[in-house]
Amino acid sequence: MSTYSSNHRCKGCICKPESGGVCSCHFEGIVELLGRRCGLLVFTIIGNFGTVRYSEIEKRLAGISPRTISDRLKELESAGLVKREMFDEIPPRVEYSLTEAGMGLAVALAALEEWTAT
Image 1 (tube, one colour):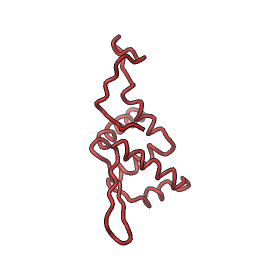
Image 2 (cartoon, helix red, strand yellow):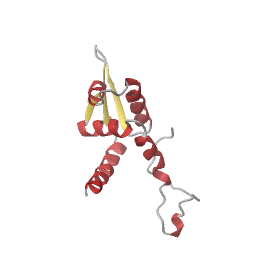
Image 3 (cartoon, helix red, strand yellow):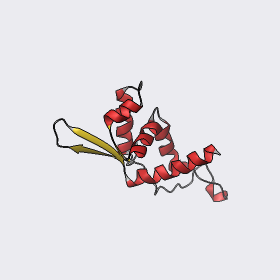
Image 4 (cartoon, one colour):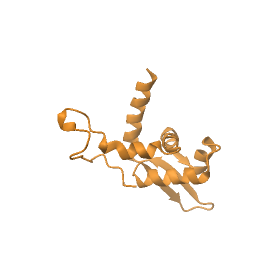
């Protein structure tokens, strides 16, 4: 999966933005990522908690396989939306939080949520 970039500029797409329309090509990847099984849920849990450990995400997504959660976390991190921080402790501790790009996306999603609630 390619890294999320808000600087993408589409050229020659099928959306025809040159005719006054809106081009959605630059956010197609993020929609695909968040649309994957539990992608939006994992992102939202991290955003709502600020900093969260894997066990808390797993607890909140009871019934979802650990592999699915782990895969979404890796994808969100790879996309630059989530930061994974490891602490050199016994037992090992790992915390997840939103990056600056992730916080920007959270603001946009909050606006979308508000729009859908009306």
